[in-house]
Amino acid sequence: MYRLPYEEGQSHLLVQGYFSRYTHKNRAALDFKMKKGTNISAARGGIVIRLKEDGNKGGSKVKYRPFGNFVIIQHEDSTRTGYWHLQLNGVLVNVGDTVKQGQVIAISGKTGYTYFPHLHFIVWRSDKKGQWTQIGTRFQTNKGIRYLRPFRLYRNTEPTQ
Image (cartoon, rainbow, N blue to C red):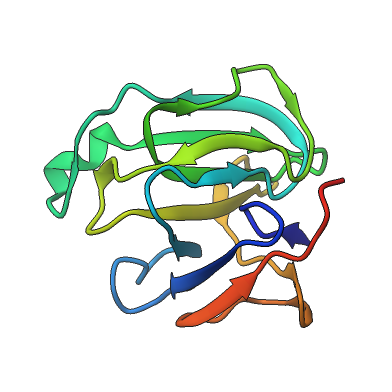
Protein backbone atom coordinates (compact mmCIF):
# COMPACT_ATOMS: atom_id res chain seq x y z
CA MET A 1 0.00 0.00 0.00
CA TYR A 2 1.21 3.48 -0.88
CA ARG A 3 0.57 6.98 0.36
CA LEU A 4 -0.49 9.62 -2.14
CA PRO A 5 2.71 11.33 -3.38
CA TYR A 6 1.89 14.83 -2.18
CA GLU A 7 1.47 16.61 1.11
CA GLU A 8 -1.30 16.05 3.63
CA GLY A 9 -4.38 18.18 2.96
CA GLN A 10 -3.71 18.56 -0.76
CA SER A 11 -5.97 17.26 -3.52
CA HIS A 12 -4.92 16.47 -7.07
CA LEU A 13 -6.77 15.19 -10.09
CA LEU A 14 -5.61 11.86 -11.49
CA VAL A 15 -5.62 12.62 -15.21
CA GLN A 16 -4.24 9.31 -16.44
CA GLY A 17 -4.34 5.89 -14.84
CA TYR A 18 -2.82 2.48 -15.36
CA PHE A 19 -2.75 1.44 -19.04
CA SER A 20 -4.84 4.47 -20.09
CA ARG A 21 -5.49 5.08 -23.76
CA TYR A 22 -3.26 8.15 -24.06
CA THR A 23 0.45 7.83 -23.30
CA HIS A 24 0.05 4.98 -20.78
CA LYS A 25 -1.16 2.31 -23.22
CA ASN A 26 1.67 0.01 -22.14
CA ARG A 27 2.42 1.54 -18.75
CA ALA A 28 1.27 0.85 -15.23
CA ALA A 29 1.77 4.53 -14.37
CA LEU A 30 -0.27 7.37 -12.91
CA ASP A 31 -0.34 11.08 -13.80
CA PHE A 32 -1.41 13.57 -11.13
CA LYS A 33 -2.16 17.05 -12.47
CA MET A 34 -0.39 19.66 -10.37
CA LYS A 35 1.04 23.13 -10.68
CA LYS A 36 4.76 23.64 -11.09
CA GLY A 37 6.31 24.18 -7.68
CA THR A 38 4.15 21.66 -5.79
CA ASN A 39 5.97 19.60 -3.14
CA ILE A 40 6.25 15.89 -3.97
CA SER A 41 6.30 13.43 -1.05
CA ALA A 42 7.64 9.88 -0.87
CA ALA A 43 4.78 7.39 -1.25
CA ARG A 44 6.83 4.88 0.79
CA GLY A 45 10.09 5.01 2.68
CA GLY A 46 13.33 3.74 1.19
CA ILE A 47 16.70 4.68 -0.26
CA VAL A 48 17.23 7.11 -3.14
CA ILE A 49 19.03 5.15 -5.87
CA ARG A 50 18.83 7.46 -8.90
CA LEU A 51 17.93 11.02 -9.75
CA LYS A 52 18.18 13.64 -12.43
CA GLU A 53 17.57 17.33 -11.88
CA ASP A 54 19.49 19.19 -14.60
CA GLY A 55 16.81 18.97 -17.30
CA ASN A 56 15.64 22.41 -18.36
CA LYS A 57 13.20 21.68 -21.18
CA GLY A 58 9.79 20.13 -21.56
CA GLY A 59 7.23 19.75 -24.29
CA SER A 60 4.82 17.58 -26.21
CA LYS A 61 7.43 16.04 -28.52
CA VAL A 62 9.43 12.88 -27.84
CA LYS A 63 12.66 14.87 -28.36
CA TYR A 64 12.11 16.34 -24.87
CA ARG A 65 12.20 12.93 -23.11
CA PRO A 66 15.91 13.15 -22.12
CA PHE A 67 15.23 16.40 -20.23
CA GLY A 68 12.81 14.82 -17.74
CA ASN A 69 13.93 15.20 -14.14
CA PHE A 70 13.18 12.37 -11.72
CA VAL A 71 13.81 10.57 -8.41
CA ILE A 72 13.79 6.79 -7.96
CA ILE A 73 13.47 5.23 -4.50
CA GLN A 74 14.18 1.57 -3.66
CA HIS A 75 11.97 0.10 -0.92
CA GLU A 76 12.61 -2.63 1.66
CA ASP A 77 10.59 -5.16 -0.38
CA SER A 78 12.82 -4.45 -3.44
CA THR A 79 10.12 -2.52 -5.32
CA ARG A 80 11.00 0.90 -6.69
CA THR A 81 8.99 4.08 -7.16
CA GLY A 82 9.73 6.77 -9.72
CA TYR A 83 8.61 10.40 -9.71
CA TRP A 84 8.98 12.25 -13.06
CA HIS A 85 8.72 15.73 -14.65
CA LEU A 86 10.32 17.50 -11.68
CA GLN A 87 11.47 21.09 -11.99
CA LEU A 88 15.04 22.10 -12.79
CA ASN A 89 17.12 21.64 -9.60
CA GLY A 90 13.91 20.48 -7.92
CA VAL A 91 15.21 17.27 -6.33
CA LEU A 92 15.57 17.76 -2.57
CA VAL A 93 17.34 14.47 -1.77
CA ASN A 94 20.60 12.83 -2.82
CA VAL A 95 21.52 9.34 -4.03
CA GLY A 96 22.03 7.19 -0.93
CA ASP A 97 19.67 9.19 1.29
CA THR A 98 17.15 7.27 3.37
CA VAL A 99 13.71 8.85 3.09
CA LYS A 100 10.58 8.33 5.16
CA GLN A 101 7.07 7.90 3.84
CA GLY A 102 5.56 11.36 3.44
CA GLN A 103 8.90 13.18 3.37
CA VAL A 104 9.11 15.94 0.76
CA ILE A 105 11.62 14.71 -1.84
CA ALA A 106 11.15 17.00 -4.84
CA ILE A 107 9.28 19.86 -6.49
CA SER A 108 6.97 19.30 -9.45
CA GLY A 109 7.69 20.83 -12.81
CA LYS A 110 7.21 20.32 -16.53
CA THR A 111 10.45 18.75 -17.75
CA GLY A 112 10.80 16.01 -20.32
CA TYR A 113 8.12 14.62 -22.62
CA THR A 114 4.97 16.17 -21.18
CA TYR A 115 1.97 18.10 -22.43
CA PHE A 116 1.29 19.94 -19.15
CA PRO A 117 2.67 20.17 -15.58
CA HIS A 118 2.01 16.94 -13.69
CA LEU A 119 3.64 14.22 -11.61
CA HIS A 120 4.24 10.93 -13.43
CA PHE A 121 4.33 8.18 -10.77
CA ILE A 122 5.39 4.58 -11.44
CA VAL A 123 6.24 1.46 -9.42
CA TRP A 124 8.41 -1.46 -10.55
CA ARG A 125 9.06 -4.95 -9.19
CA SER A 126 11.91 -7.27 -10.19
CA ASP A 127 11.05 -10.85 -11.17
CA LYS A 128 13.16 -13.97 -10.52
CA LYS A 129 15.14 -13.32 -13.72
CA GLY A 130 15.99 -9.75 -12.69
CA GLN A 131 13.60 -8.17 -15.20
CA TRP A 132 11.82 -5.05 -13.99
CA THR A 133 8.04 -4.97 -14.46
CA GLN A 134 5.72 -2.04 -13.89
CA ILE A 135 2.98 -2.82 -11.38
CA GLY A 136 -0.27 -1.23 -10.28
CA THR A 137 -0.52 -0.33 -6.62
CA ARG A 138 -3.16 0.56 -4.08
CA PHE A 139 -3.19 3.81 -2.13
CA GLN A 140 -4.53 4.95 1.21
CA THR A 141 -7.27 7.46 0.37
CA ASN A 142 -9.92 9.27 2.39
CA LYS A 143 -12.29 6.51 1.18
CA GLY A 144 -10.04 3.63 2.24
CA ILE A 145 -7.38 1.57 0.50
CA ARG A 146 -7.96 1.37 -3.25
CA TYR A 147 -6.64 1.47 -6.78
CA LEU A 148 -6.96 4.99 -8.18
CA ARG A 149 -9.19 5.78 -11.15
CA PRO A 150 -8.64 8.51 -13.73
CA PHE A 151 -10.56 11.80 -13.69
CA ARG A 152 -11.09 11.69 -9.94
CA LEU A 153 -9.77 14.06 -7.33
CA TYR A 154 -7.79 12.41 -4.51
CA ARG A 155 -7.18 14.21 -1.22
CA ASN A 156 -4.26 13.19 0.93
CA THR A 157 -5.54 12.87 4.47
CA GLU A 158 -2.67 10.68 5.67
CA PRO A 159 -0.42 12.18 8.31
CA THR A 160 3.30 11.85 7.62
CA GLN A 161 4.80 8.84 9.38
